[in-house]
Length: 200
Image (cartoon, rainbow, N blue to C red; front, side, top):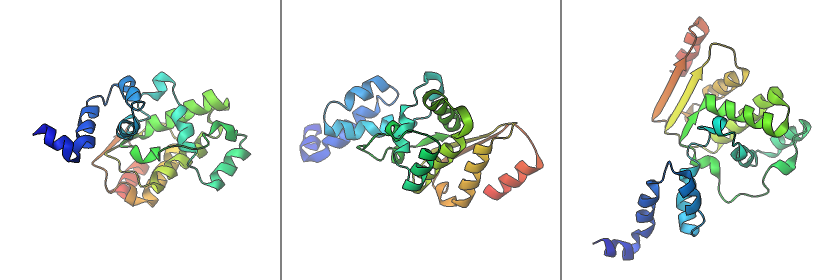
């Protein structure tokens, strides 16, 4: 029975089922993308479905530059005004990597962009808000199909988080297909209740 499925064209589906077992083994997934075009096409989405998880601890922020390559011309011009070198961005990419995102934790996302700007651009948080919001716009415009969105509201004010939440409220289609929306609030205030009422 298995042989007939392979010969009837089910090889990609069966290969994907095998590759899925390596979902958390990034080293093996990286090896899979080098095997052939089919394996690459099957492994890349697994590598890119949760890119911001743990990036702060590993200090590996290279993927942010790949996302920045998808910015529109106006945003790229703004990056140039901020003295962000265009040579940091890859000239072409094989995939639309933002379409593969399935899990997005806003706190990890903001921290990753902040870590990238500190390590790569040496200017800290000066322009991180613009970069965060620009990247988030890419995710919304590419209509990524999130499975999980985690929003953590800290006890301190975050202008970046504020802008992202405002952007989510303006683009409600972004959250309509999310399977799990987790909202963590570290501070209780009247403003927060108003914000939650607007989202609901």
